[in-house]
Structure formats: structure tokens, C-alpha cells
Image (cartoon, rainbow, N blue to C red):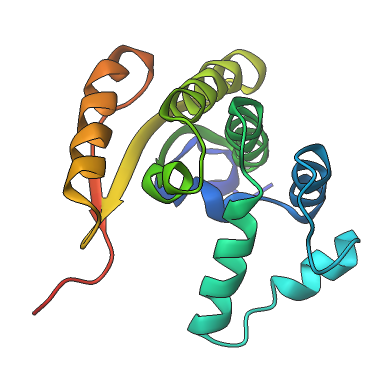
Length: 171
């Protein structure tokens, strides 16, 4: 093992929805009775071979549409913490994008409870401290963004450390 590999690591920017592994995506889709255009790990791996940015967005939407329950969001955090720990990570700052999920019928409570429960479980099981930043996007509905801010404040003692803004703006 080289000297760098032995040092503890931190990760300061990871989008949790983008960390979902093929097996997890299949399991969530089946658990939530949602169809995917493929039905195997190999099929999902092929989907994850992005051809361009439009394809990336298409797969992002497909992937995030299967995330429906607090357990889904908890699992995403815990699974990623296990992977991060295998690389020596002891601290992760993770971003998640709830507004699109809420617009598709997921409750704010399921989102925040799931992600925050996952952060707690990640520390207990893998020794990785996970802190969370929910993110809005430029052009998002103002009321949804205000609700996101209220939720972020309400969960500040459960691992929420900020409020992010992403997406392209007008220059």
C-alpha cells in the first residue's frame, strides 16, 4: 500500500443520486414496481455508458424516478458511505436534489428522513461522517425552493449543513 492510500480521505462534493449502483437501481425499481428499459445489472451498466450530456440527463431522470421511499434515500447514503469507506474516506459532504422528487409525488418527509437516517446509519456502520446539502436549481419554483430552505433548517441537527443552488443561470 502506498503512503497516500493509507491517509484518511474526505470528499467534499458528491451528488448522491449519481452514486446509485446498477444492482441498487434494479432493486429499487422492483421494490417500487417501476419499470426500467433493462432488467439486468449488465443492462444498467450499459445505460450508464453515457454517449453525450443529453443521454446523461435521460439516464439521470430514469434513475431518479425510481427513488420513491425513505428507505430508498437511506440506502443510497449508506451504500455510498460503504464505498467511500473502502477508499479510506472518513468524511463526505453529499448533495441531493429533492425538488424534482417532490414534483413527482415523493414527500418532503420521506426525502429528508431517508437521507438523514442514512447519514446516521453510515456513521454507525461504516465510520463515515456524512453531511448533507439539499440543492435547488436555477429556475425552480419559488415556493418549492422556499419549502426546501425551511426543511433544510428544520433538519440542521440531523446532518444538513447547507443549501445549494445548481444548474445553469443566465449570464
